[in-house]
Each structure stands twice: as C-alpha cells, then as structure tokens.
Length: 328
Image 1: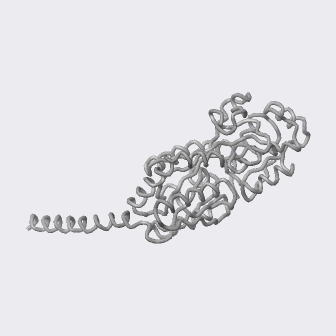
Image 2 (image 1 turned 135 degrees about the horizontal axis):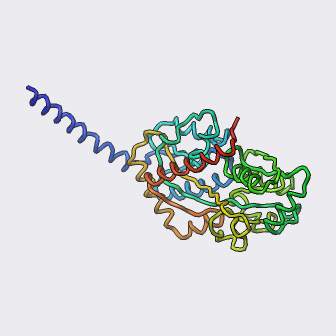
C-alpha cells in the first residue's frame, strides 16, 4: 500500500515537472512579449539615467521589443526601487540599480520598502570612480595638496555637494573630511545635474562625484579634476592623478550600476537578459561610448552580480557605521 502511494506520488511529481519545463522554457523563449519598463530611481540627465538609456536602446535593438526608461526619484533611490520591487515578476519591469540602492541604503534608512537581497539580479553594466573636482572659475587650486591648503585657510570651512545622504559622493566627502581635518558642510541635492550646476556657479567649493555627470565640463575646462578615486588613472583623464599619487593613499571609491528585477522573476528571463547584456558589453563601439560618457561598460552573470552586491554591502556597511551617518 505504501509502495503504491509512493509510486503515485512520484508519478504526480514527475508530471508536474514535465508540465513546468515547457512553461519555464516559454518564459525565456517568448520574453519579452510586451514592452519592458526600466525604472531609473534617479533624475533625468544624471549618470545613472544616461547609461540606463544607452543600455535600453541596445536591448531594444537585440530583443525586438520596446525598452522604456522611466524616472521615479526620491529618498536616495528608494522610491523607484520600491515601486519596481512591487511590480509583477513577469520580466516587464526592471530597475537600473546602483551601489547605493543595492549595497548602502539599507544601512542608512530605518526601513526600506524593498529587500535588496531578494531582488532578481541580472548583470552589472557600468562602473566608474569619483573625481575630486573644483570650479575652474572660482578656485585657484591645481593639485589636491593646493586644494587642501586652500580649504584649511578658510575660517568657515568648505562646502561639498552630493546627490543625497549615503551616496558615494557623500561618503567620499565625509571620508575626505576625516582624512584631512578640513571642516566641511554637506550640501545634498536632487541629483547629479543639480550638483553640477552648484559647482559651476561656485555655490559649492568641491564635489567628489562620479565623472559621468561631469565629463563634458571636465573636457572643456569648466571643472578641474584634481584626483580620481580609482586604483589607477582613468583612461579619458590620463593627466589626473589617482588619490594615492596625489598624496592620499587608501582612498579608493568606485561606483557601479546593475540591472535587477522584482523578486520572483523567472530565472530563465534573468539568464536571457544577462546573456544579451553580455553581447552588448562585447561591442567595442559601445565600450568607447560608455567611456566617453564617463563609465566602463561591464558585464556579469546573475550569480556573479548577486555575490558582488553582497560583498559591497559588507564593505560599505562598515564605512557607514564608522561615520555614523543616518538618513532622515
């Protein structure tokens, strides 16, 4: 009797598996069968937005379906990420996430409306580093050493801008203050474009921001780069030293972005999208275009992406705890 019951159970399970297999294959094979929305949780015109739109265009060409970027901003990217995470897990909604929304915000905010660890990870697609930048019209400093001396001579200290509490520009500014002893006031903005405007107008003294938002202004000389926070010099800024070369070792800070999906999105869809993004990343013309914008074009498997975000959480969580910063 027990053997007969076990046999029937085994037969039922096998039937269910056989039924599920074509469905899983169809999820990947037919996807995308309708327009795909990529939620970018940061303002239009910033680094994350620009790079997401380039990637969306390339995915549209390769997959034959519309990929539309939609900006949903606020709370350091949390509003857009929560909206995306609560969307139907059918591959029709993706998120253009960043180091902040995947590996930093959970240590800053008392609660998030999404769980970074439960998302469907697809692939990284860009990486860049920050640049210590001053407005050429308003600041005489030509080197990092000169800027530190200039800043220390100001009785009221200096101001620096970032696109919000807990972003890498904010963390870089706090670390810079700790390492130099320069009194600094943080000026949070709505995003990269606003920070650029404040810097160009001389309304903030410095930004240690990712270069994608400033590429054109670095190229035309309106903004002067004093040092990059990469471990090596950046290809499009060969004359700008690293922080170590400029006299401040152990100041490596990189930013990155990744495509993720709502929890429960079929793995077959994640894998297909990741493979397509790898094809995009292999295109030398696209690699050059990303560099011109201010970022490297990167790729990774879903498993590699999830593991990378987890390692970054450990690293940045320690720094947030050290600085004691919290978002309201």
